[in-house]
Amino acid sequence: MNDARFEDGREAPLNLGAMDADDLSVVSALVQDGVFPATEMRWDRSARRFALLINRFRWEEGPARAASPERVQSLLVFEGVTGVASNGIDRTDRDTVLSLLSIAFEATDAPAGQVLLTLAGDGAIRLSVEALEATLKDVTKPYMAPSKKTPEHPD
Image (cartoon, rainbow, N blue to C red; front, side):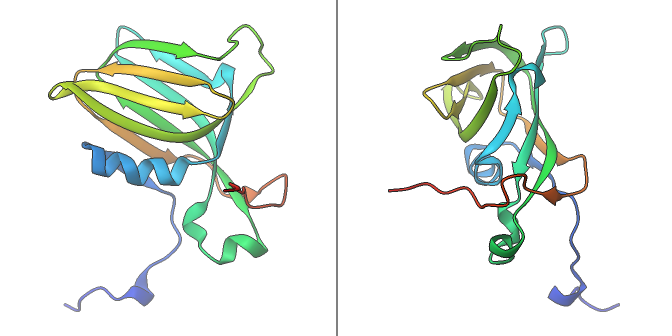
């Protein structure tokens, strides 16, 4: 049996898990600039699950993204959610499109804590969780970003 080689790698949909703050920082980088309509947020209280269907910018494409910027629909799911709060989001406006900037975890009574999803325009979603357990899974094929541009963050 031979060892795997870099050349054996292939483009494949992401399917990642996060069980601690370091893992979540990787997920956060991958979902930065993900956009989603406010209607694509769901909290299933009885299952203690919060999910977002986001149009994720494919940052993992590296230098190739400049020539062909792509997005992909991804499910971002948090398990063990005991409470959800939001700020700066008009959930009655079905046309509101939100842009995800970052995700962070702060332990309160380990392993319990709070997940903070920071949105553009001073919006935020706070999840109270029993423990950090998140998954990010691509659910469609990549498509050309409608803007045909890579998101920028001026200094």
